[in-house]
Image (cartoon, rainbow, N blue to C red; front, side):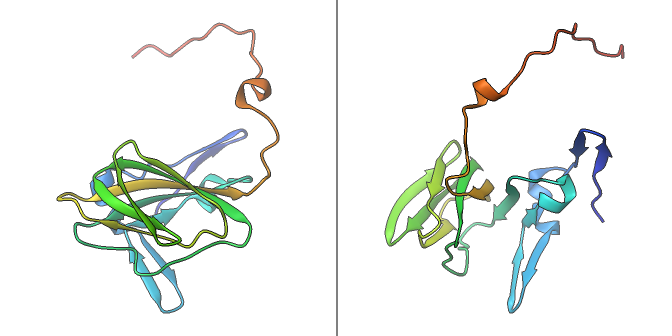
Length: 148
């Protein structure tokens, strides 16, 4: 079983090599998706859901879906495929990033010759209230690392 290392202000999990993501399985009523792991609970996320996904050659997500309140951001990190939103189909590959409104009916497939990998971030639509640079605060402390 996968466990996270936690501290007062952090949680860390190691999924291992991406090629081994198919060891994880997402199960819902009448549905099992191999190669998918949600990280909200493991990392104690409070403002988003995060999943890592592996889709084998020639496979498609077997259903369309949409959300009630959450938008999704798909970050493709390896492979090639196609993404479909409301019937519009476009190519995706390593480096492609797709944002989908909650109501967008979505699905994606692997039409390349290697496994297709993506990270999906899900967050409440319209909830973001500030730019990252304004939220960050510098800490007046010298950076140090332990010696190997």
